[in-house]
Image (cartoon, rainbow over all chains, first blue to last red; front, side, top):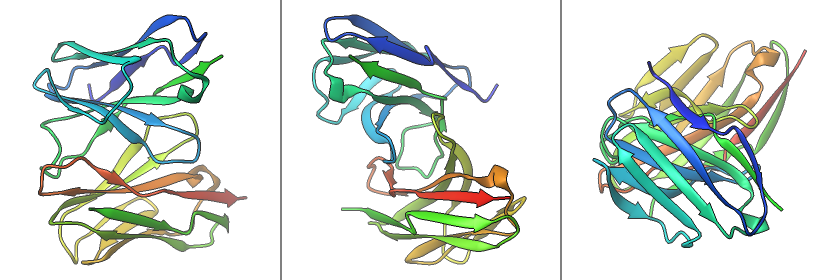
Length: 115
Length: 110
């Protein structure tokens, strides 16, 4: 199994809603990532979990809250989002954390629309 | 600070018309240069990793090459199904995260 699975594929939420994005991989990878991608732009790193501990937070607003319950799962909890947070949210994983020349495996993403 | 610049931003080709995409980079110690393909609304799909100048890798109609300053993705006799955005990214030896280029949107017309 070389897949990173993300759910849901599409999500529409209001600014007062609370929702969660989920990501799962069964490749034994010990690093997992959340990226945000706006249309016609490259992915922007949000968070990195290394060995189930948060190792990087790229100054992301607190309305985004990541969680890594175990080595296979990664969640992104959303609360009080703004319309400008509408984007494709990508989960990725790698065997070990970046900086060692390893490729990332990306999920298909969650297309989020905030109304 | 690492920088990655891809050109052109967009490229229109006729089916069968070969061309190249460019990725210029500056990095503090290259650990790897990656090429990804991304279809609209999907996550990037890994194509190649290149580690050192002079290295080349091929997959079907795609061939990636690497020099000390840039990488090329050569597309030979493209088909409409090759239409996608191609992303280049670099990984350095300072433990920093991947730096992505802006991507090249390739459109192949039948």
